Amino acid sequence: MTGVRSLLGCATERLAAAGVPSAASDARLLLAHAWEVSVGELQRRQVLGQQPGDGVAAAFEELVGQRLARIPLQHLTGTAPFRGLELRVGPGVFIPRPETEMLVDLVLAEIAGREGASVVDLCTGSGAIALAIKHEAPAASVAAVELDPMAHAWATRNAELLGLEVSIELGAAQDSLAGREGMLDVVASNPPYIPVGMEPIDPEVRDHDPAVALYGGSDDGLRIPLEVADRAAQLLRPGGLLVMEHADSQGDSLPAALARHGWAEVADRADLAGRPRTVTARRAG
Image (cartoon, rainbow, N blue to C red; front, side):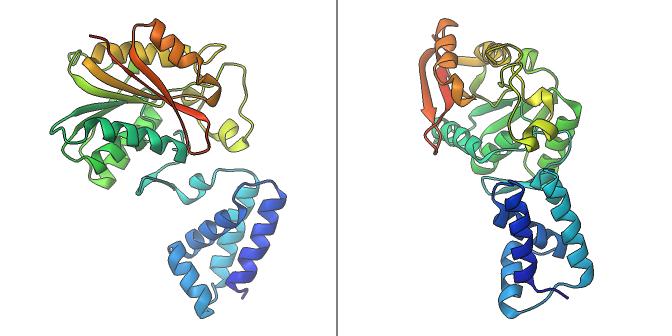
């Protein structure tokens, strides 16, 4: 049997040589998954000198091989962390990113202290945004909309497993929630926004995230985001807030387009890396 330190060291070297980001972290997560323990328990067993059996080592080797082929880590473990939640993910659904957590902060700040605030997440994917908002603001009324049936199934499953009461509608964001026009306090969205013809560099994104969740439908990537924003304007009450993520290259173009579409108090915010990431705007009137 091979010890934990040796398994992790070898795997980390191989992953790093293949250009896998966060090689050491990925190796720990994959070994913990193969051993069916938490990372904390893995570290405890390493300190105690416990050794994984041959079956665990073989399963770990298979997982490392798949990660070397740039299958997303989250597809291999079946989970993705988001603001303290553990979401189930896999083929057919966009993997939530840490930078999207800032969008949730902006929504929570808007509805703080408002009992029964109404929020919808358009283009919800795995349900990450909507479920995080409901988890952290349980008094809010939260709904979500997703176009793709596979992603909708993942979001629905996540809501059920987490025990969070979020209504998740299957359909296009652009004509969703009929009958709720002018009633919502906040619309959040992380829509598809990559310009058509621009291929993502990371193979995990290019080859595994669904295209319907990536591409914004035009050369500048703004067609779908602006269509979603137009529907948000119909759903929001006067003074209601839109919070929308975008590509770092759209920090000027999307806010300018929203202002042209009649939105008020348009402002853009940078993520923790200092890149333009999220725009907020209010429905005029």
